[in-house]
Image 1 (cartoon, rainbow, N blue to C red):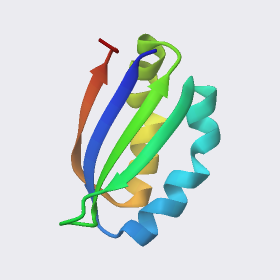
Image 2 (cartoon, rainbow, N blue to C red; image 1 turned 90 degrees about the horizontal axis):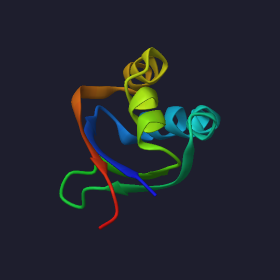
Image 3 (cartoon, rainbow, N blue to C red; image 1 turned 180 degrees about the horizontal axis):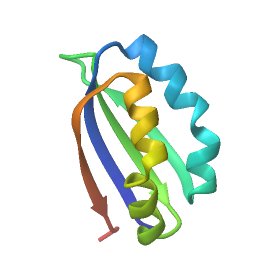
Length: 89
């Protein structure tokens, strides 16, 4: 099953998390099958997300969507996220 790894900075984790959580239905509808959320122990406003996706192309479509871009802006994501599309080896 393909995975997506995303790392980005947020202005304020406490502000970011509720917006992220509210977007769960859109992720699921887009093909997300599971997720893990991590915070950098040295910088709690750096977030690392690991998603399982049903299909790599659906993942690319969701990650590139205007909807996600708007949610990230609303949540206070700073700069461009570092996105990696992964396949199990």
